[in-house]
Length: 195
Image (cartoon, rainbow, N blue to C red; front, side, top):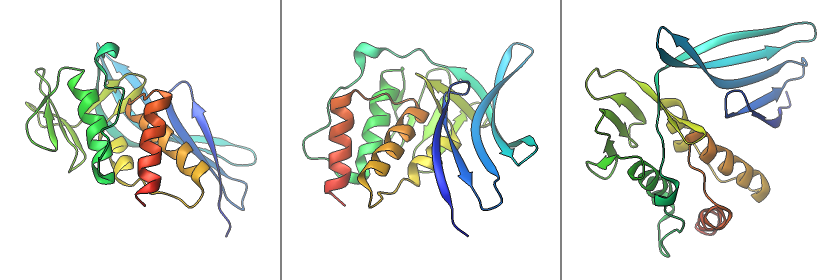
C-alpha cells in the first residue's frame, strides 16, 4: 500500500491539516475546531474523511477549554543563540513566546501563567493549575495544547530538506510560534546541520 501525502492549510481552524491519499481514494484531514458553550469556547480535534460519494466528520478527542492570549509582538525574540543544541531549540522558542505572554519559568520545562495556565514541555501537558484539567491556549494564530506539543516532540528531520522545512514551519505555526524569515532560516539550518 503506497501512501502519498499532500499538505493543506485549513484557514477556518488555523491549523495545518494533512490529507492522506490511500489506494481506496479516501482522504483524511484533521484540524482543531472551537465550539462555544454558554460563554466559553472548547477545543476539539476533528477528523474529516472523504470517500468517493460521501464525507464524514468525527471528533477524535477533546483538547480542553480554550483561552486566547494576546501576545506582545514587540517583546518576541528575533534571533537564535549562536551555539544552541538541537534538542534545546524548541524549548528556547516556546520559552520566548510564553514569556512574552506573561508566563514565568518554574524550571527548565515548566511554565506558569498568573491565570493558572501550566505548560510542561517535557510531559506535553497544557493544563489549568487549579482544576488540573487540560486546556488549549490560543497563541498568535495557533493552538498550544497537548496535541500540538506531542506533534512538536515527534518532529523528525527528513532526507528531503524541502519537506523538512515545510513540516517545521507548519509545526511552529500550529503551536502559535510565528518566526520571521531570518529566525526560521537560523532554526532550520541549526536542525539540518546538527543531524
